[in-house]
Image 1 (cartoon, rainbow, N blue to C red):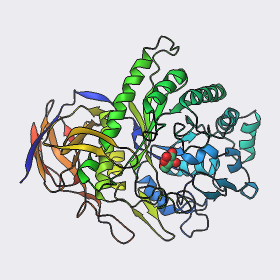
Image 2: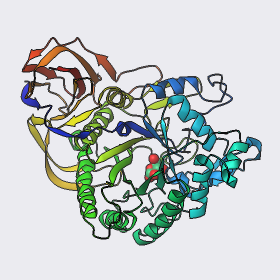
Image 3: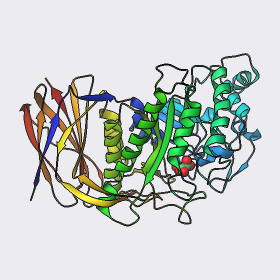
Image 4: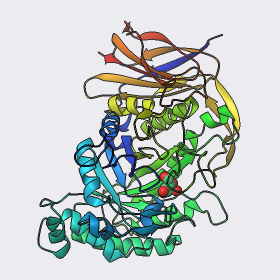
Length: 510
Ligand code: AHR
């Protein structure tokens, strides 16, 4: 029994520009992400620089717009000088975050080679845990200053005549978390981050700085609102973004609760949006008009490979994703688009093997279910985010995310159809629809409020045989299928969205 719904598209009702950095990723020294993932000089699949060619191709398919490096928890005990210069001279260190040895064979310059090959913007995180503010500043000098001072000359000595010009830098990682090496309270973090920010910006005034916002939402020490409000206030004159992190999961195996979990991200976005609005009115603010934006620079489904079950070591965090995870990922991307005026960066954590859309073994790789919605968004959903009217039946849930340590409990009516839309520069509207219903298709009337639909429309669907279906090296059960084009014209058309699916419809409005 198909339900009916209505979706109204109005190209005049806009939210904001969809920043290309909404489709970013994150690369950490963790498990088989770098070594045995993107970088494997001994592999027959590696190119002349040691990068796995099949991985490069798969990464390119995601159009990764910005790539965060080198952590994550790893960065809070990482000293970047260990990872530059002749490989044979680089020291092996204990990686205390993930309980392995770090050879430092891969470092700043290798990462930059990778970033160039896949055509992405680099985004570095400095160590504000065990690192000093001077160490952070020297890294900016090494990467961004053309010539003259010691670290710029050192880069040249290492074979990189031209600066790397890294424009995005975050001031530490998850510094609100008790698990973080060098963890600080909000006041102490603000002081250290402020001094680091000054030195880094004085070294290269062009750079954009991202403050490490809240990641700790549970436990006795968690006070995300105090953390965010304090750091926004103290760092406001130096930062361009506040970063937020979120991981969701389906620990209770409740499909409908899990489908609602991206709402946690949207709710927290609203809270921080309000704090930013307050800061913009702060009489102490000395920088006029310079907006602070939100960077969700770690987000994903992650709940299986935690703690004792694959939470550390050389095979850490090798989460295998299914169809319901892919639908949640599509829900996150819809949520980022709906908040495109304030969310200007989002980095799926991570990229390869470690809670990632791409999974390798020594001979091969496969694309996980979550690869497909990210790919569709990254390749197609650009331009201006539209404020879409959706009339769809709802279901009620009271625990809408019980996974990954977050346990937000409140009554929530969740529409079965989760929709976002963009209006691209080429006059094409892109309509993104998750049908969260587990068993029923939903038919929607899609109406244009301004201009008329002018087919043919392309239709792409991410789906699989059932919500627990996953891919592996031999089977691709969850994937994108291109459906027959729709010959639509006029003010409306009807489309039936299959149960547990994500659909992207692309076409012109005249
Ligand atoms: O992405 C895995 C880990 O999750 C990161 O290292 C850390 O920042 C977060 O807790």
